Image 1 (cartoon, one colour):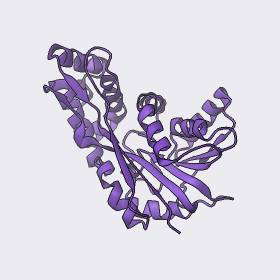
Image 2 (cartoon, rainbow, N blue to C red):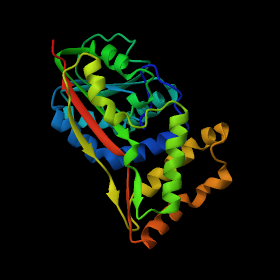
Image 3 (tube, helix red, strand yellow):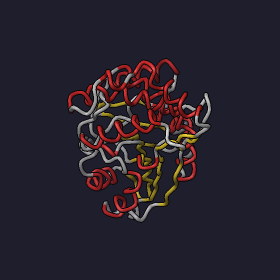
Image 4 (tube, rainbow, N blue to C red):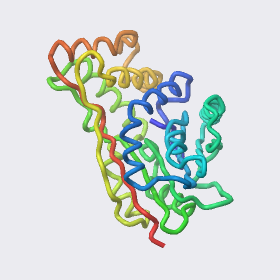
Length: 277
């Protein structure tokens, strides 16, 4: 999940180096889904784009590629360590059409309006997503694009049920829910856009699904559990010994493979709409 912004609630995954690296791995796995969403929504060459809750920078780098040298991307995050990490990655990759700022874009002022505002796994951490979108919309030029992609965690499961995968998925959902995260935010995007005064958005849904030894979902779930473990222990949800982190991904993989089964990621639901005034 990209680091939250716009009046974030308790971001249970933290901002450790492990978490920032995990965000990058997750971003690469889900990149095709996000790219397809942005292209379908109309993100293209020459646009000026604001990335809300830019985290480790992967969404901004994707948009920077889509807008090309003639466009520009501003990534904004509330965590200074994430901003430093993302700017360092941009320098190391010699990406000149993106920069990262510290702050809450809902409260910030910018020298120019944007052709588009995007966010990935951000609104799920907002106490009031409608208010966040309403405040962000003032940074859009007339008929500018608002594009968000959020998780709906109701979809994560294994079939046939693999006990370790099911247990890990439940621990993740329980911990996030206990910290105020909206784990079904994807399904709420349509009314959120309407509530913020935008036209009803177009929608799409994507799910990572697979089985066998190479499926990346095992490592994604295990990585999220590792980032969440301090919060799990603090809330009394689970102890490290119960979780068995060192071989968690391996155990999930072995059970799914032994059952000749498959596993599903959370659904990624994308929504996009244009400012009407």
